[in-house]
Length: 229
Image (cartoon, rainbow, N blue to C red):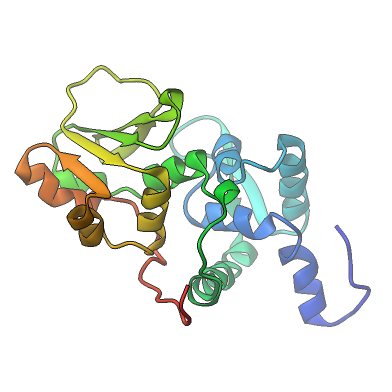
């Protein structure tokens, strides 16, 4: 970890927080990721070796700790009290980005894997009630091998499926990847997407009415840009 060679508290905090990828790791830990594989999904361009090293550095600094995961025998990564104090900084950083750094995304920034993981992580499965509900989402602008994804809502959780889980589909969704990213970021409203045909939904009306409540869009989608895109 590089240092600024200063005793200033701002410099000491920046040495930890401003290392590349660290803010994104803290973001995902704050949102509930605990396993190494989950953290990898949030930083797909970061090598596993670098992620492992950075987590060890954060452990050494007392920002992250490893402890047993409540639902299993393995250990996961969790923020310490010191790490939790970084969470408002991460949220403020995201709010600033929504307000001041909004622009049309470059092609390489429209990441399919990151989006479907964000949708799974942010979804509200209880919006459909207690019954099992399967959503099939098709990204119309993607290669055939990456077009169709399934989201299984059951037992109070949403699970992303890369293969057909074999249950009857309750809701079908068609949208381009770029437009779904715009929906997630808050650049395109749900109703505007439906009315313009950029988002198509097929299924029972009672479930279609709940889709908006289920959709796991960014918690910062409500933040309006300070300047025109």
